[in-house]
Image 1 (cartoon, rainbow, N blue to C red):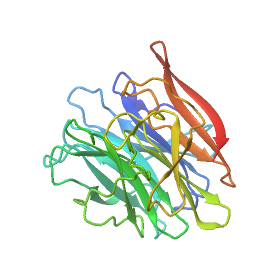
Image 2: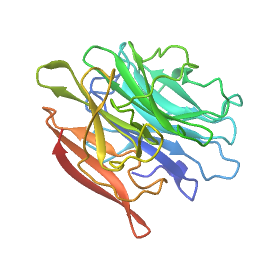
Image 3: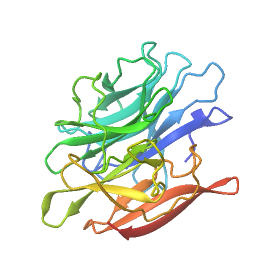
Length: 297
């Protein structure tokens, strides 16, 4: 698939892929949706979050709609799909276009996948320099929605630290100025940069379990932990309390923090939740390459 709006050096970034778990308007369950940040490299750019659809498992694609178009040269980044409790399709994305915020998280929704309404802030710090970004949303068996994201700000121990917050309808996330909570292990470790998230069933536990990964694993004092690049976390209490560390299926050895090593590594649990597939990237010389492996969860 090629978006003509990204051709000729106009630029594309931060794509996402989503399979509709249920019908939305005339879009049947099983429809594949693809979205990305388009136009980042245009002179006097006006970036957009554009959506494409496929009804043949990705063999062919067609343009569906545009969620948002920037009114300035600032960026719109990192779209993420979910379905709210009313059955409407939601897109979460990072927005740099508000002069009051370096970046914030925004959500919009659609009853048919073509008309997008209700654009509103979900995480927008009172500190203008804060940059919430990279939202990932999963629905839990309780009906609660769990969102993980990073908050980048001034350099320091908690620069780009991973946060989470929850919603009971997948649309209303509370006061946007409330930055959420920092997931941690019992000994105070925490992730920074580019989180990713998955959910799986767990035998004997109706809540199932969450999997969380970040680019860098930090000790409580801010130093890089020994397991950084080789650790995934699990939580069997809906994200509350201490998270438990397991070995990541893919070990990423590069320690540089940029757009390649362990960057938003994809996680896919098996249907029974006992195995975990990971796709992660790492450098081979100066080339960034993806690797995949499965491991016990």
